[in-house]
Length: 114
Image 1 (cartoon, rainbow, N blue to C red):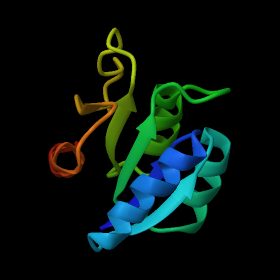
Image 2 (tube, one colour; image 1 turned 135 degrees about the vertical axis):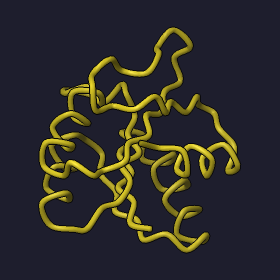
Image 3 (cartoon, helix red, strand yellow; image 1 turned 180 degrees about the vertical axis):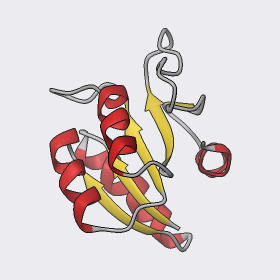
Image 4 (spheres, one colour; image 1 turned 90 degrees about the vertical axis):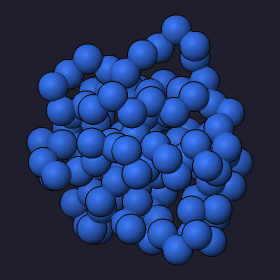
């Protein structure tokens, strides 16, 4: 599966992307919404995993832009904040992954992403 992983914390981005690759996924990484939009324009992506609390443009706004570019893109939101629920826009899907998460939780989120 082709995954775009958007996370602004470099160590976390590296570790999760490495784990995804070890499990057979093709992974592109980005540290911001702006960088991720470039990746979306240049690479095949099936699933977007994005932090909600990105610097600059938030992950939910970015996900809406990403879906405008790729309507079939499946989205998983990740957050460390307990008070955040699934972003409320029609194409977002309900998949929210709470940090810290396990590998099993990440795989389940990817499988259930809409």
